[in-house]
Image (cartoon, rainbow, N blue to C red):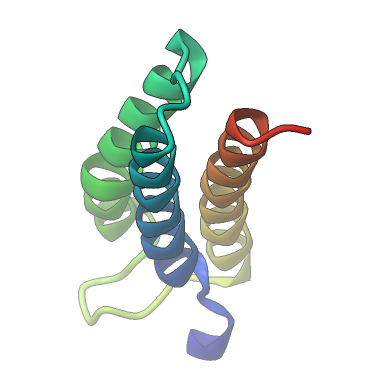
Length: 96
């Protein structure tokens, strides 16, 4: 079951990718709109602080193992949503 836990990787990737998008956009003088700035706050705030802390209490037992498959699926789904929001924001910034 531990091999199916991808939410940590996806959240770290989302945070890193999103801020690389913002850095590249700033270097190319591309304007960042309110939705992009809001997404940055959500990705950083939820993905970096609240979700890992909350998942530790909700999804893991006292020994650091996931409580069950439903918790694995839920945690991975949340991590994937954060990753997809980061990618969608980058695409809207660099849209064709």
